Amino acid sequence: MRRDPHRRSLPRLAALALLTAAVGCSAAPAPRRAAAPPMPQTLAAEAVATQEFGLLAGGGWAAAWNLWPTTAQQAFSQAEFIRLNTECRPLLGLPYVIDQTAKLDPDTVRVDWHRADTTGSNTVVHQDGRWHFTPDPATLTSYRLGVDQLISQRRAAGSCH
Image (cartoon, rainbow, N blue to C red):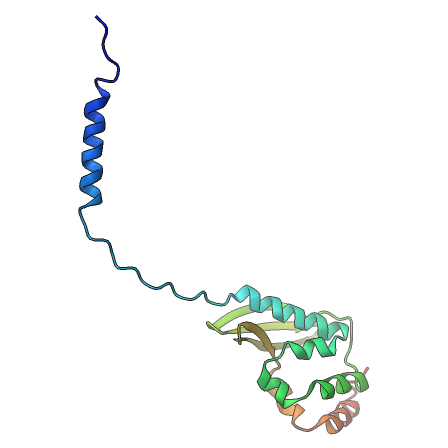
């Protein structure tokens, strides 16, 4: 007499179907929550800082200014920024090195850097759907002097190359 190989499988399948039905119906589904919007990434902010520093070290004044937030652009026009750095050129070719980044809040990242013996810190802010490099407060304050006076001060200090 031959045994049916599926004979033992039938009770197992019935038990599995019963278990699946019981587990699937045991609780009401949890209410769905709206997904939170994705938070800007620190890595993207650091990439903007790296781009800004590369432009500054290489003389890309107009493109560097374009990475600023509107508030900084209003403090010093692109034409003034280009004139300042053309007539009183900073040292070119010396790279900025990012030492550390820190997320201050979802829309602000602090970037600590050095360039030879000079150290500094800037913020990169997320506005209007993208990251913007913010000149430090002391630099923004110096821009209020006007481009002519700023060029004179920098020349007197020997910081033009």
